[in-house]
Length: 279
Image 1 (cartoon, helix red, strand yellow):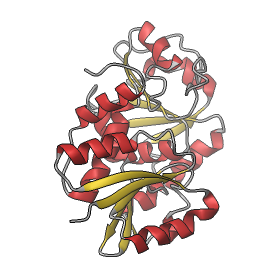
Image 2 (cartoon, rainbow, N blue to C red):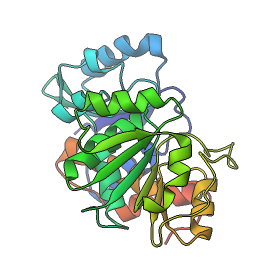
Image 3 (cartoon, one colour):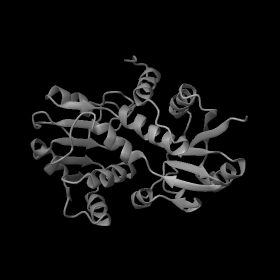
C-alpha cells in the first residue's frame, strides 16, 4: 500500500520543524504516511495547489507567506478560517480541498495549560495574522476583556470593528499598554519582535505587572524572548510558543487522520531541534 503524502508549503521553508513532528507522529501512531516540506514562491502558489490536488496529496499545512493568498484557490473554507482570513491547514477530501485554521485553537489550548481564562483581562500585542486568529478564538471563550496594542493603532481598531467585538475589546496606545500593565491577567505577544536573530528586542519596557500575571509569547526561537525574561524577573508566569506550535500541529493532524497525536512528544521534539533538552 502506497504511503499517503502530507506536507507544508511556504517560503522560506528549510527551517520548518513540521516534518520532524509530523513524521514522528505518523510513526508513533503506525499511520502509513510521509510529511514533506515544499518551498513554494508566491507566484507559484496557484500551480502548487493544483499540483497538490493532481498528485492526490492527502493534506498540507500552509505557512508564510501563503496563509491568506491560498483562500481563493481552495474549494471550501471553514467558517473560522474565513473569519480569521487565513488558512494554515488543508484537507483533501475526495478531491475537494478544504481549508482550516488551527492557529487560534492551538494557541488557546496551550494557554489553558498555564491559566484559566474565565473573567480574565487580556492584552494582545500585535494585529497581524497570528493576532487575528488568537483574538477571534479568545473572544469566543466568553467572559474575557481584551485590549489590543499595535504600533499602527488604527489596525487594532479595524480588527476589533471587523469582528464586531467592540463590546469585548478596545485598541490602546503603547503608552497606555505600559502604564496599565498591572491591570492585565494575561499578556499575549503575537509579533516577530524578539525573534532570532534579534533576541534583545522587546515590544516595550516592563515596569510593573500584576502579581501572578501570565506572559505568553508565540515565538519559540529563542525559547525565551527578552519580553519573557523581563516578565519572569518581575514574577510572571511565562510561556513560549512551543506549546502553541505543538497544538496547532496536533489539530491539523487530527483534521487529516481523525486522531490526536501526543502533544507533549511534539513539544519535546521542537525543544531538541532548537538545541534544548527534552523533558
